[in-house]
Image (spheres, rainbow, N blue to C red):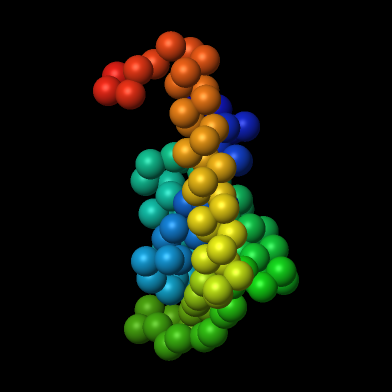
Length: 107
């Protein structure tokens, strides 16, 4: 998958991970990287931006494997943004599939 296409959906992926559970940066990176092969450095600017604009909050949690980890938690603003991004993605996906001639049941 091209890097340009990936950039457009990573924020949605991060928010969907945070919807299901609070998580720390490296864990978020690993979960996305398992499917999209991204750079670890991609995640942290997104998380910083999310905190700065109120999409996420952070808290520290003790770790058995070293210093406390910074966990990210989605806010109500973040959930609204997640829904907006998801709706945009679904619309984009449907339009592109129509333009390239992919039918609903085809992959």
